[in-house]
Length: 513
Image 1: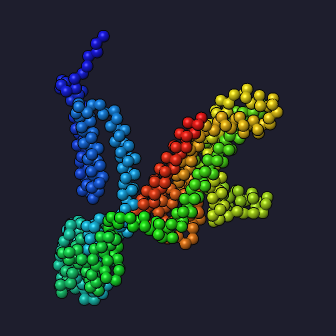
Image 2 (image 1 turned 30 degrees about the vertical axis):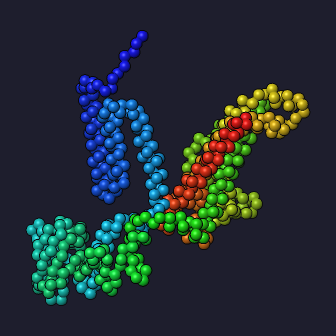
Image 3 (image 1 turned 90 degrees about the vertical axis):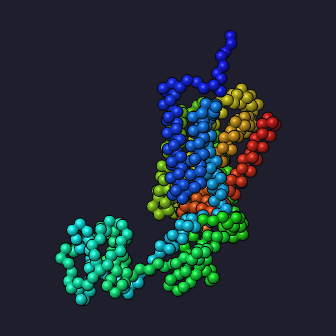
């Protein structure tokens, strides 16, 4: 029977539903393009370009019949591009910049911030009050001869310049201080000129004073400081305004610095030393977590498989409970239990053995604590897997070995374990990858502490590479996004090499099998 084919090149009549669908596509695309333009205007051109690409892709795929085939895969591709590919490349890009807490702004925005900096002449400071004047306001400055009263001004936030005249007494309708404070936004936008020509600006909640710009700018971008006449040149290699003596003005701006972040990592002992130590501990932590959770899970699963064990169902429920409770809840509970001053674990150890381990201040004990908690959180997963894999081991082989005189442990090592390792292997590798980046446990339990001495960046004894990078970017002494981006790139390369090595190992193991 012949099947009719659809010629996609010929236009098809539009139904009312098709017209509505096309209209919705055009409206949605227009809204996304407007959002992209708005993002561009607020100084984020990269994100604006990305939103524009997504909007145009949405318009072409869902608005044109020739791209009909891509309608089912476009959402997945767009989502992966936005939330996987773009963050990876953007983080790598940051590794080649000086982006950080002192270099957050653009060059133009830094100029605006520095030029808006003002110098207040305290010798001209004079208290003020505000008087009501038929819907407008007057500013009154009191002195020994009476004072000065300004012309009427709206104080609605519009910049204005008003003059004042000498008066012998204060006006009768002065506002209370709390009511005058409510007008501070309007007061900040006006300039009051005294009879002698002195211009006063609002310099606080209680006074006006002569205010001058701290910096002036030349046509070549050079800034001159009014207080001492010092000049500062824009240095686009470091992202700061710098004078001849090396003094830098803050804030700075984002700029490309090439491989400087990577050079810092490999040449600075204050960075390289803790990073090597953290890398070694990360490997130890990931391997230890996998080994101990696997061992404990298999042992408990083997015990639960014993045919003469009573109350198996109750034991299974109790042993699976750590897996059922949210991990962050268990971690916070353990943080309290291991408190070295008031935790129940130390209270029990002191009562029985007379010792109070320093779980939070001793680096070795903190790592032991971290590993113990992670084993507690991870063993139920391994136990559930082992319970399924153990059931696939033929009982006839075990019975035959027992008849030959093999003891229980020998049966397990020679028959059971070799048969459950192959299906376990990819899951063990996945568990290793998970624990290699298990920053939630570290940040909730120890926050990476105790800190390592002699480092120039935030680094702790229990930090793994992921938490180490997170702390550099978002915590402690500052936000060094550029440096953390460089470290992230190195971690990405390292993990890629390890993943490829694991893939080769598994393929060879499968070929041998």
